[in-house]
Image 1 (tube, one colour):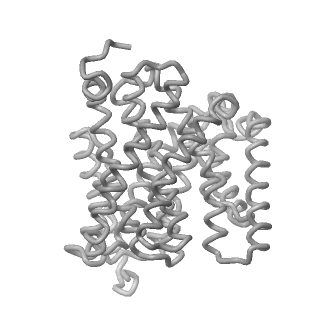
Image 2 (cartoon, helix red, strand yellow; image 1 turned 90 degrees about the horizontal axis):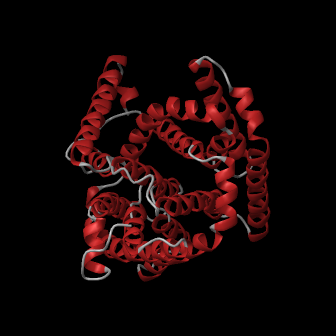
Image 3 (cartoon, one colour; image 1 turned 180 degrees about the vertical axis):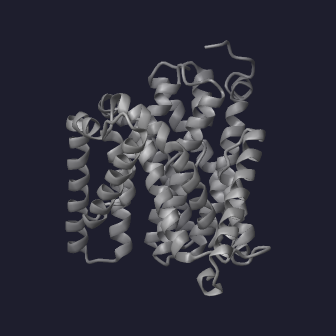
Length: 395
């Protein structure tokens, strides 16, 4: 560890080099029109155990920084949604959410069984394959100017339902990984889900009070109040058996109106910095020699789940009356996996599960976070070839 090496100067030099390296990767990703997540993961593989060089950064520093990255990711995700949007989505999109869950979690379950993994690894792999990357998808839609498209409300509805499903899934995973008895696990799960429901109901009904309490003309006061509240609720959520990330997501939902818009802008740069470090830290702990044995499984899983996500998106957008071209666009944009898949795999790493899970998740996300944006950019051409064999009319 670096602390044993001794000097504060060396800490700053190595940390500065890491952050500058991530900045270069972000610029490269922007230049080629892709998400930077695959590049962050590749960098971690290059400079972790078994890579071309090893970064001797403090483990404690990296762990805390990565955890803050997850919390900020979920906070900003919650800030994207209003209480009214959540109510509408829960009322109208439940069937779409169930189809999306079954279609995209089952391939992960099947893969875990085929690979001969245990129940815990299989449960985590189902989560890895199920959830799309809200961060990657939001950026792609914005870059391509598709936020006003006919299919976009359905895409966003699916993302909201997936994020809410994580509010139940993450506590469940935490309890399963803890290895408690069936009775203790049932009680813990009931407490965790109950706490989640209470906070969610409070956010939906009394979010305006939270916004009023945080509101300030000073950006500094608003940001400090929001971050302090998020960390406090996250810590209390952990005590109740709910992930701190879920607590952060619920805090984001509770903030509404002009405060929500300002808070989102203030938090986003912090989120980007800490999230980049989170992805780097995750892959630093993966030995590149673990990737070849799972490469075929990752590619096969990528092909299957790309198809299953296209199918579930086609179903949802068809119910909404979207034309065929829009259905293909929705399917391709939802293919991308990213931050949540890595968060889930990191839970397995922290619990000491089969190291192949982290390697498979990393390889899978590398493929999906790259393929999703690429396929989305060529969705119209793809629709013309695969839907009717000829160019489709504009929606």
